[in-house]
Length: 137
Image (cartoon, rainbow, N blue to C red; front, side, top):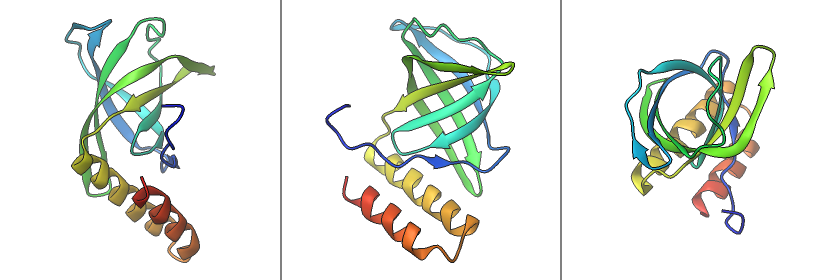
């Protein structure tokens, strides 16, 4: 992904929760119970979340996210980015790459744009930059 332009990450409103379960470890399917995590940032191609769980960051983990904010509800699959974690107090912060199909990607962009408009309705310049950047991908 280094040569591609990445989507703009939007800081989620405090208290945005997702339920996460592990789908596969190193390509082998597994089933786990879902755990509640707090979503820090979301873009059309990545998610950053915080949890008390210490995930095996040296393994290739595929995660399922059940995420709802405002009136939007997403079921997303992502791959934990190897060695992309840090500790924040008693929580762990992880980054996960998402690869949604074009329709879901468009819905994520619309949901984030609506959230930006709700957070600061008068920042039309920021909304236009976000819209221009994301539509040019």
